[in-house]
Length: 218
Image (tube, rainbow, N blue to C red; front, side, top):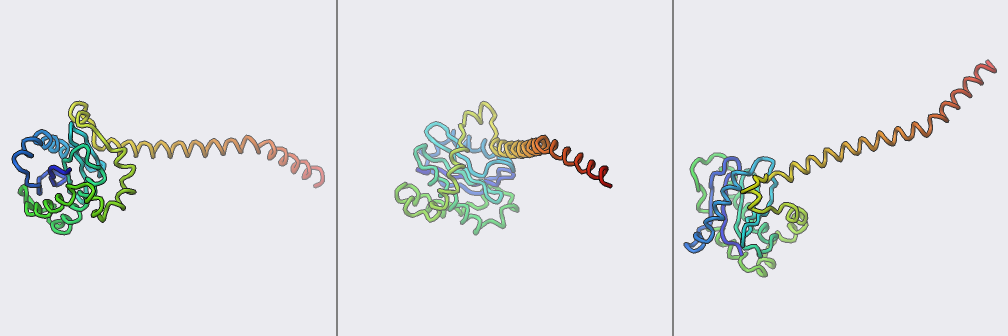
């Protein structure tokens, strides 16, 4: 189930809102909330907009939209698509309520009142079966997230010890597109050269024949 949620500004990791967690949840998730702060610092403009990061018994899912990062800590067994559907619900409501003010706020937790909507939405998503039935976004997200949630899964250890990048897949995608374009150009050049080698002798013979006819009869 969804255990805790944080909302920060993507450009500088300024906290904008957060769920109100009980004392037991705070103690159990203390380390994972510190890890969430690390994730916020690692996010760049080229980071993937959706990512799941596994850490022990929990998974940290984040979604970036309009310079805002929505992150939730959920049990590892909680369906990933439901987690992103939950974040999508938060993002839509937050954008409507506070979107124009995000870039101008200076103090942390300026939108603490958003907890009311978060608490209500969290309750709807606690029961996975009920959430699956009630989520209006899930069918649309199933297709949208099918590849992303499979590819963009990382391990917290990679971020902590290897300094792994949250935008590695973006760089990889860009590199693959660049290499693909190079291969297409190379294949096109090979085809052109093959055609020249195939038809050049015929063209040369035809040219010699024309020259011969011109010289013989003119």
